[in-house]
Amino acid sequence: MKLWERVVEARLRKVVKICEQQYGFMPRNSTTDAIFAMRILMEKYRDGQRELHCVFVDLEKAYDRVPREELWYCMRKLGVAEKYVRVVQDMYERSRTVVRCAVGQTEEFRVEVGLHQGSALSPFLFAMVTDQLTEEVRQESPWTMMFADDIVICSESREQVEENLERWRFALERGGMKVSRNKIEYMCVNEREGSGTVRLQGKEVKKVQEFKYLG
Image (cartoon, rainbow, N blue to C red; front, side, top):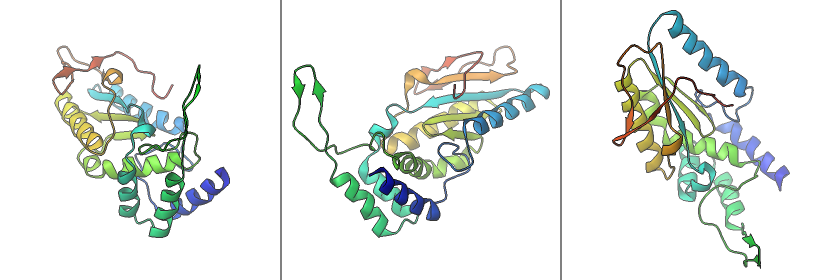
């Protein structure tokens, strides 16, 4: 099955172009590249003695929450031929699972939402979905980096990064994803006194002095 998934993935990659802000599971990109890009940006602002406001966002149970209908829609919008949309649909139509516990296991049942865990194809399918869900908001907040479900939103002002955070939350959650409120963290490089805090839907985001990015 994994060999067939790799074949399908290779065909999809030939026709689908994922945005440059997505570093996760992309050819010739790695965590090192994402970390290096983030480090260069921060050092530029430190050297210039200017503030850089960064919000680190994590998606809650990212693969499990992808709506199947949203996946088919995103594939078509990205120009995937209908025959390959049907190939992927067939993989999911035939899928069954069981739940094991101390007293045994359940009968097989269908799962109606989410991507397959452990599938060789799932990372690229996830990248396609997030690419389409955030297409418009990326134009409004170009200083953004993604590595799979880890997102960094940066801006020169606290107000702007707060506004962009809400835009990203809305775009992602409108498509069935969920921003993990407990894991969002805000950091300011070269913070001046009284720079304030960032809020999301009225709740204050945890403010940190340092953040272990992709660690």
